[in-house]
Amino acid sequence: ERSWLLERGGQWIKGKSFDGFAPLGPYLVTADEVPSPQALELICRVNGEVMQHDSSEDMIFDVYHLIHYLSRFMTLHPG
Image 1 (cartoon, one colour):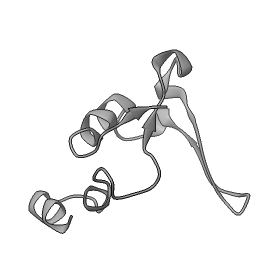
Image 2: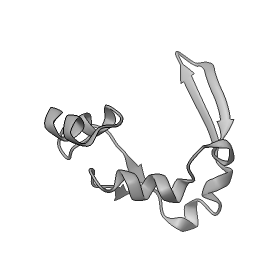
Image 3: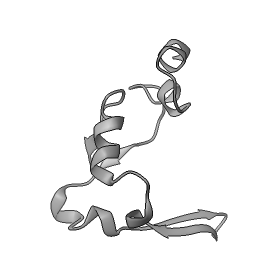
Image 4: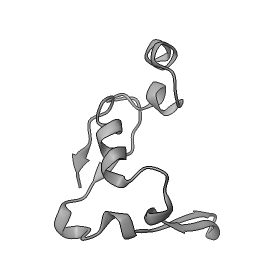
């Protein structure tokens, strides 16, 4: 959806994340499964090797802001 991306600016994720565009995620979990979203361990592995390791408390935007922003252009489902 190039028009959405180009007309509104920002990251490429907007143009690739409309409902039905991808076979996977994003998904949300319920609040009882994540008691503190600002204290999550974040790990990126490629072929089993850790490439990045950090915490959600170090992010520029908090989790609540990111959910608010993403829900403007994609449907988020619990799961």
